[in-house]
Structure formats: C-alpha cells, structure tokens
Length: 201
Image (cartoon, rainbow, N blue to C red; front, side):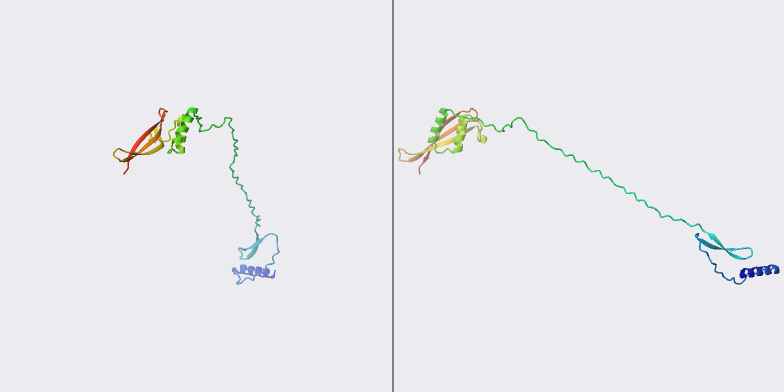
C-alpha cells in the first residue's frame, strides 16, 4: 500500500508540473497467489497513466478425456468345403458269370480209339503233344496250331531203316517214313508213307 501511495503522489506531482516521467525502475512485487481450482495466468496491462497492472486472466481448463479405442475384432469365417461321403454298395449280379473259354466236348468213337492205339503203338517218332493234336483232330477239333505252315499239316509217326544189297554188290539204306496228314479245311485225315534211299559209301 505504501508503494501505491508513493506512485500516486509522483503521478500527481508530474501532472501538475506538466511533465510525465516514468520512474527509472519499478520495484518488483512478488504477488501472493492463492491456489485456486481454476488455472490462471497474469497479463501485463499498461494504462494511459502509465501504470502497469497485473490482471489475472482465467483460462478455461481443458477437460481431457482419455480416448477410448474400440477394437472391432473381425472374425473371418472361412467356408470349409463340404465333403460328401459316398458309400458305394456293391451290386450283386443275379446272372452267373459265364466262362470266357468254353471247353469243347470232344470224344472219340470206339473204332477211332482202336485205330489210334494201333497207330501210336507202331510209331517211334511222334511226341506226346503231337499225339494230343492228332487225337483232337480225329475227335473234331479244327483249331490249326500252325497256320503259317498252311491248312494241311503232316506229322511224322514212324521211321524204318533197312539196308538193301543191289545186284552189282553195292548197298543202300532204305528209309520208310509214315506220316499222319490233317486237312483243316475239309476235316479229312489219312496216313501215308514216304520211301527214301541213301547210298552207302
């Protein structure tokens, strides 16, 4: 208060003298601030009289609210492929399975069987497969096992060897071959002989 009175007196004296002088130094006064709920700052205001006044200005308190961050959890639904299980029921066929190869019923008559036995009894060159082939043909089979040799096949049944002395004293070897002939076109069969001679050296 003393300081303010002194300032007023100086201002009055200067105004009376017509001179306005600013004091060289203004003593600083430490204001005692009363803690208030509102946040305040001081502004320096200069009046026309040159008086520096400290005017408190109240600043609005900014209310800061914590920003609420909302996380939206997006659940991606993956379409799973639908698996369809197909159960196959075996279908039983009522029809019997037919054999691919039908066995032919081949049979020989009594006369044919007797003839074949006598023929094979005297043969010395025929093999077992050849005997089966001959019996099959006699029974009625017409399946040619060797078509590349033609439709007429000859199987050698026997061979006889004989040494013959000629009138001049020379000797020859006489071969008598017996064959069994099968004709797959006509179905006929027969036996025939071939004679060949070889000179003895």
